[in-house]
Amino acid sequence: MKPNFVRTALKVTAGRPDQFPLDDKPQIALAGRSNVGKSSLLNTLIGRKNYARVSQMPGKTVTVNFYEVDHAFYLVDLPGYGFARRTAAEQRAWSALTDGYFTAEGARVGAVAQLVDLKVGLTADDRTMLDYLTRRNIPFFVVATKADKPNKTERASALERLLADPALAEAAGVVLFSSLTGEGKEAVVRLTLEALGL
Ligand SMILES: Nc1nc2c(ncn2[C@@H]2O[C@H](COP(=O)(O)OP(=O)(O)O)[C@@H](O)[C@H]2O)c(=O)[nH]1
Ligand SMILES: [Mg+2]
Image 1 (cartoon, rainbow, N blue to C red):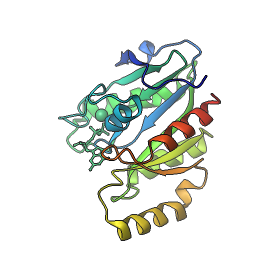
Image 2: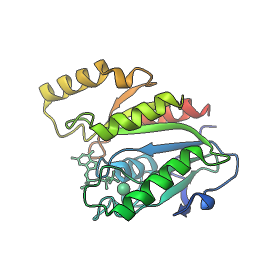
Image 3: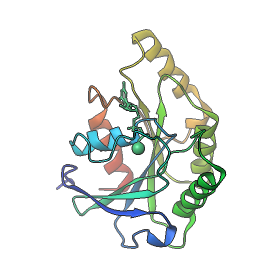
């Protein structure tokens, strides 16, 4: 039986790498800049309005949140990047925690869902992240968020730009997604389970 995303519970909120769970369940991490729509994606996937808090203060929380889905795998909410108003200390905390997630002894990341804002396109930080994933051979797919925002013409050209970008050469897929309309939800579920071999 496929894991049921409705059966999801927040298991661990880690502010330090030594707090990451060490069991063998596969993990898929959600990466993206602050405000790109990570919490909204999570809420859409698990079919709840506000389980992962849709942030009032984007980027302020520097924690890695481990959501266990149906006792089968972890959906891991990484802290967002590119938050301009972060202090130097907050920025250091972000780097240590994110780098720790990918490199800590016993790191268990199986795949990454990389979120990018469809209308905004790839930011410099997105490119750094995609380059990091590619260099480390971490399987990833791309979720282009807020697909309800651009009009039809803009959608088509934004998607075309993404698909043609060499930064996405290794992506296992590109999904247009909207937490407002639910567009792309099934595709994200499918790519997640495929990436984890579930
Ligand atoms: N129009 C639109 N707005 C969205 C969508 N997803 C998120 N947002 C809005 O973008 C803002 C940031 O969303 P959030 O999920 O907290 O982003 P996070 O910082 O990446 O977790 C919020 O105001 C959301 O309501 C979407 O699919 N469509
Ligand atoms: Mg969030």
